Picture 1 (cartoon, one colour):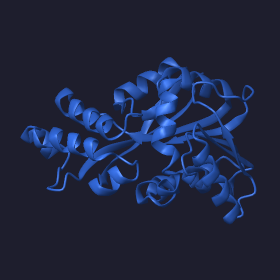
Picture 2 (cartoon, helix red, strand yellow):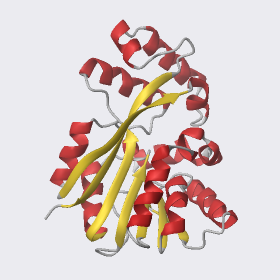
Picture 3 (cartoon, helix red, strand yellow):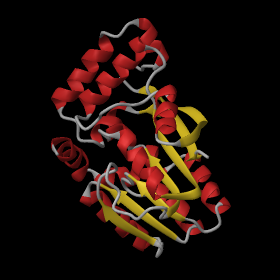
Picture 4 (cartoon, helix red, strand yellow):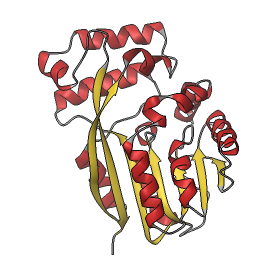
Length: 253
């Protein structure tokens, strides 16, 4: 699939950057995931779109098993190597797409995804697969950048995301996430929302954005109306703030 190739191209040569990225390696949401895993009493965990493995690392000390699952081999190599360095013997890696999970029904107690789903072309199908492999009584937690709450704002956000990275598909709004989870058979809620500051230089360098793409982003921001620039707290160097949300769900009765 051509989009899968785009993801591999975007992330394949930059896996180490995501291991050390402050956005990905730190955050109160990682502490929340650890507490949630601890509360589930040694769960079996699936981390979909694991990237460099940070969500899996957070939950592994409290879990029976963690499978870090990603499309990009180099991300999995970084995750596996880091797990060995940290002596996380219960964490293993598996390659594949979110829309086709190669696991048996009711396999996992806790399924997580962090900063990945905005790259997926088939989120509803992926959520259907998540429901299939989640055991009754299990829990799901998705964390991702969110679409902006008004069309004018959202158009600019999606444009700069796509200009930066051709593997970007869509950052979904709170309403879109809850609707997709409901359609897939979940009871879902927004557990947390926050703003994330993105340093423009690091945001573009960690994905390897070309000079042409960087120029395109700057052009979009320079032409943005005042209400857009204010909402995203746009800085002189094109650094800006983005919305993030955490969706928590269980299978609906």
